[in-house]
Length: 244
Image (cartoon, rainbow, N blue to C red; front, side):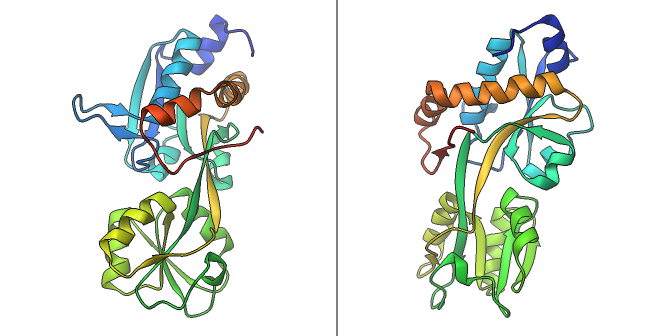
């Protein structure tokens, strides 16, 4: 990996502290520690390792959802962000390769004739999805026939899915498993419509930091640090991404 120099530290952290943006809505990668009230989780642990290698103190900047985190990229609020890598976000953020993947699919109500994720994009089908999630951005690019309705947050999306009798709720498979338990008779469809690539990134205009961060992500995958963080945080539903 690139040598850590004073210039690289300054590019990563102009304030002298590495400010790490976290998407707190992704319960697989982030959580709030019950004892301290502070951020914790897989992304948190990886960020601490990055700070250790750079020789920089780390502070965390929680965001309520990935859209808020991405929208803040140009506002000098965070230096490294952990969120889903999507083309729409790449205008403002230089992403690393993915460190983990999360399957995205659909929950359907009791009695639905739909069996597979590939069957959902049909005329007359109404899909509800949390706005600004990485998988919402994917569906917004790819859905051609079904009606796609966006709602603020996974909880509100599930409520509307039930109350307004949508044909499908789009989400991350682990979250949909929880939603399924709250709606007897509902089913998670076979297959997936995408796998969200969870990555790290720096705001555009920091090329040396971007290069170092990409190499760091590849190293923590290969060394087993990502697997260790997943195990220590008791997370189920993450797949370590393949080598880029």
